[in-house]
Length: 156
Image 1: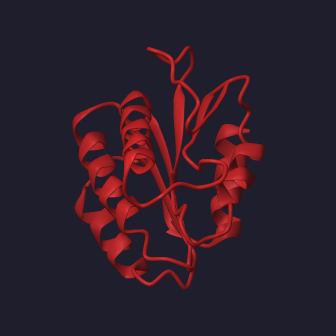
Image 2: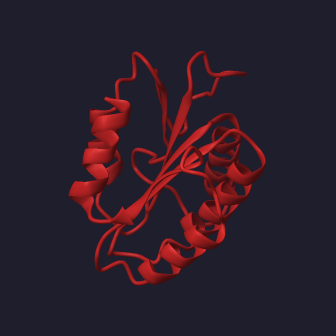
């Protein structure tokens, strides 16, 4: 099943929930490329990119943040992508939370970034410092093609 913001979320996913995490504002719709790869007959896929976008403050923004927080809490696989177009400050915050959750629960985290992403070095170092097992941090590295290949090999 595919859930896209602001679609209502179920009380509980019927399959393993995969949250597509990463840049939304000021970057291409890379999420759709990932959604197109994942077999959503086997996985519950969560795409936070809202059609038409949303304001950065106000009711719609609060609804978006709440929706994402709920979906992240429900999901057990997080697929992060950090594009070159933006720093992705909220995604960095969510990545830190995901690493912490993975250290304390059965959550899998994957992180990929564009070679020109401005905080790529930091992502690599923070990922190492989290000291997660290969079952928790299932992918970490640069390059869109590498990231797509990882998604195809594990979730298609």
